[in-house]
Length: 119
Image 1 (cartoon, rainbow, N blue to C red):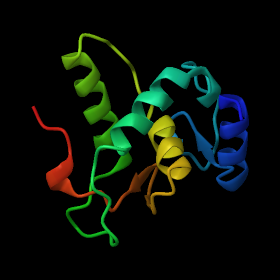
Image 2: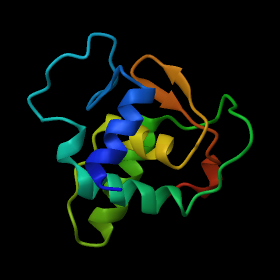
Image 3: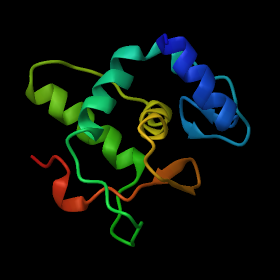
């Protein structure tokens, strides 16, 4: 399955998912679309594979927006600059089967705050 096929499958399930996140208006974004960020998607998948996913979402559960910054900082520490759009992080979470709760344009996840990357 190609990256484009994966994004097509995810956006079929979440038709209002765009580069900014869950966007009810699905506006055009000058940064491009989800299919333009394969490297960021792959970096997000690698990060998700390193964190602990709890069974439930709590008041301390991180958002997709916070997680996207974790991936950016982690890659920067490794000497690589990768911009991860919020929507790409949500797509990666969906692809890995992580349960999500929508909160405006973000997704709240059951990822353990203790297992996240912190500088």
